[in-house]
Length: 127
Image (cartoon, rainbow, N blue to C red; front, top):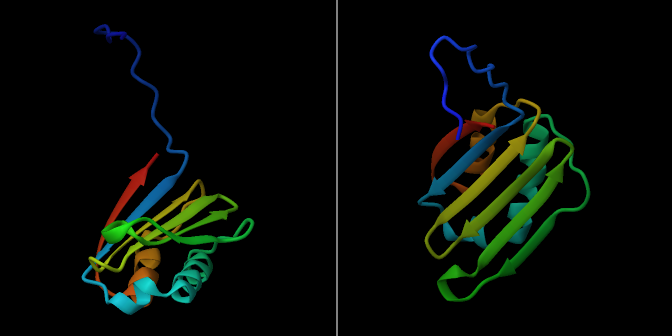
């Protein structure tokens, strides 16, 4: 590990390559999380709402065991991806939108609430 020397040139400014909106929904209703058509509709709606374009087909599968069984979705977008993990047993949904093109994370969170309900917690990371 290299240490900075006093008086040396400053570190270059970091320019993020993309942004991640981590949307956690809690206290969701069971039915929207257990409905694959609702999950697919959410993915289409959030893509439109944030001005992105899908790339390839939506992957939407139900798997897991017991309390860990649930629906997961993954959609490539031209600038990266959207993932959804629905936990109807505990009334939670976790959505990640990553893109190298800026987008409105608050809008994405609003679309998630409209489709799944619940109380949102939004974190935005610049990577």
